[in-house]
Image (tube, one colour):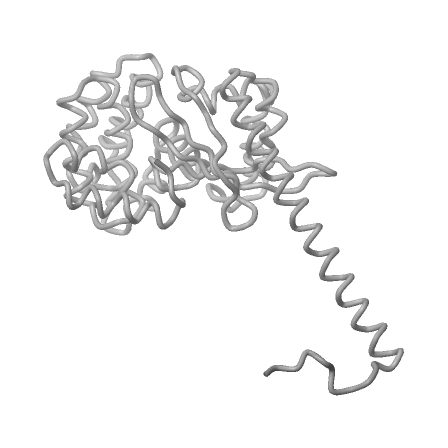
Amino acid sequence: GISMRPKTPFLCPVVFAFCLFALTSQAALASELNSSESTMADFGAAFAAAINERDQQALSELFDVGEFARIVADDLFDDEEAKRGYQRGMLSHGRTKFTSRLFHGWLSQELTAKYLRTMDGDRPLIRLDFASGGHEYMLLSLQRKADNFVTVDIFPMTTGRDLSESVGIATQVMLKPSDSLLTRLFGSSYKPNPEIVSKLTRVGDLQRSGDIRRAYDLLLSLPESVRDNRVMVDFAIKLASLIGDTEYQRELTRLEKLYGDEESAGFMLIDYYFTIGEYDKAMKTVDRLETFLGEDA
């Protein structure tokens, strides 16, 4: 048999003290980790509750607008003064108002938010269930601020990119497009084209005024080399979803054709695969997402 009796009759005081310290440190570390996980779970639940209650003040306290603006500015500009100017502009109407605008797409719909779990040890996962059908998953990026956590960015599964990236792109392309920005976005194959810059400016104006149909039709008139860019495909899907099923399915078909192999497009394409009867593709996409997000009925 296996004897549980130690082969040495005793531990010297120094070794004993070291072992006791190691055990104590491990216990303290485990306690701290459990406490941290609990705090993040509490934070995720509080964030979901703020969405459910449409509590814009609570969201502005849970979401660090200043840090979010810094992340966007760092991605858009190289010049430090331009970064500071952009941050001032984003914050000029107040944190609560900015947060309200940022989350308008979710807060304006009838939905239920639910905290599911914390992924990777520090990223709360929230699911949005829309009353009209459909779902969204959001991964929160947290930072510690004083004794609390705050959200500094969000990764929505429907876009497959951080919210800061989406906001930065949308701000520049739809508010102030330029040849230099479009070259950065579309690559060296893009040549300066005043007509395209003018059309994109007009698309942004029409969208902000609520004339979605005209904005969408104008977007369709752009050259395929521009329209086929993932950013423009995603924007077309957003506009089409506000118009009707025919337009929405048409844009999802383009997404599948151009970017169907990319992980970031998978969540958007589940419904599309189901609609056209490609059940194997739908199930494979669900399996990939379940591996990434964890099980969820």
